[in-house]
Amino acid sequence: MTTAFRQPPAAEPGEAPSDPEHVARILVLRRLDAAPRTRVELERYLAQRGIPEEAATAVLDRFTEVGLIDDHAYARGWVTSRHGTRGLGRRAVAQELRRKGVHDDIITEALDPIDPEQERARAMLIALSRYPQVMGLPYPTQVRRLIGALTRRGYEAGVASAVVREVLSAAPDEVPFD
Image (cartoon, rainbow, N blue to C red):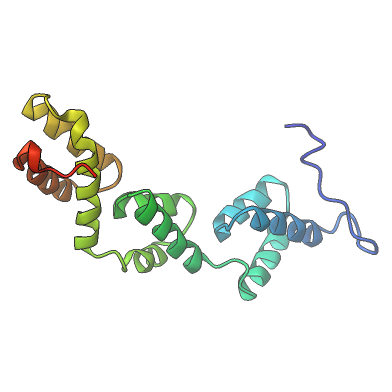
């Protein structure tokens, strides 16, 4: 990165160019314009950019108050995206949200809509889609690879094991590949 890119944004007419709250507002708005962010992500970003903690807290408090920063909504959207679209299990989604600085109580609340049967069905779809890649391999290799694929995506070992047993116990001509 060049140092010109990392310079604070220019001040608006009538604003002091060194006002840290003004700079923080502009930086946060730019980040939020690109994509939703958690409060912790924005705190880290402002600290990285050299914004004083007091100014960052004031700006982030105000943006939270008016609803521009909403960790609850962010977590719900993240769960929908990562579980529904990417097929990640609860554990993997929770781990990603923790890395982004979302509190555990918010994570738990966001994961509540995923029931165990829904998660098991999603794991089944993933195992069925991976089955053609392991078909013809020795049974222990099939088990290891399919369980590995599911656990890497964040499915609990018990769910992964049950789903893999079910997929492998079906006759190859009975397994739907669609």
